[in-house]
Length: 282
Image (cartoon, rainbow, N blue to C red; front, side, top):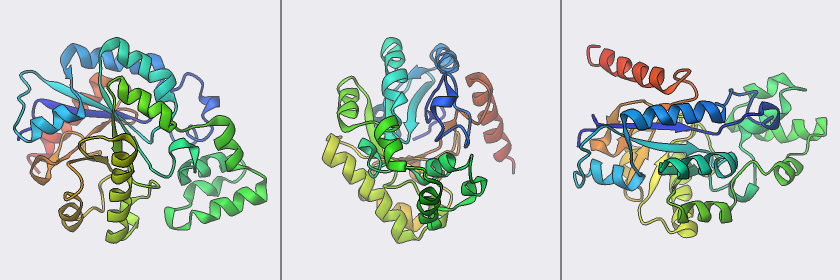
């Protein structure tokens, strides 16, 4: 099924106070709530919002999009989506998918890149630590008296089970985003499969989604055909970060990173279309 009329866009979080996000701002600058609203107003002017379930029906040839449409998603399951973003989306009538990491929901643990960000003011080299050596971050934290557990308890950067279920009841969809957010290009095929299936099974068991959606952590780079052949026994649709591209007979869809691809939605969409046009002639 052609995805010419479908645009998938995603964010991680929003913030009007970067000081309150010390685990994120050393990594990238989130959009403000005002910027998000401006993006969404642009999208609503030119596209119709659709849910993940409608996207799946479209890709299967079961549903036709009569006008350009967009699917909105948020990666990492961060708490600002509940407090800041949900009221905006409900007011504008925009469905969205939240892709969560099973190890982090309920603030059980912290993404290794967020740990590195918290350490970076005192130990800049922390930002260069890879997933395979993430235990080093815990060692550095102990030496510098930075308490990740206390941060999780007091700041609660992630959504809780109760919050996610409330969002589901209001029309949001939940998908898997791996167990612990590794870079798939740096882990084995078996570990890629385990991380994927574990997170999707977690969503099924805890949130009773009838279909299984998965978004790659970081990117789909490093995922082989053997990976897709295996996980599509458990997953209905996968999402990456390759903008407007479609692969795996329509079961894998690219998304536009709205935090990195342009200062506003119009520029982000134009850039994605330009890249797609250029690739057709390479």
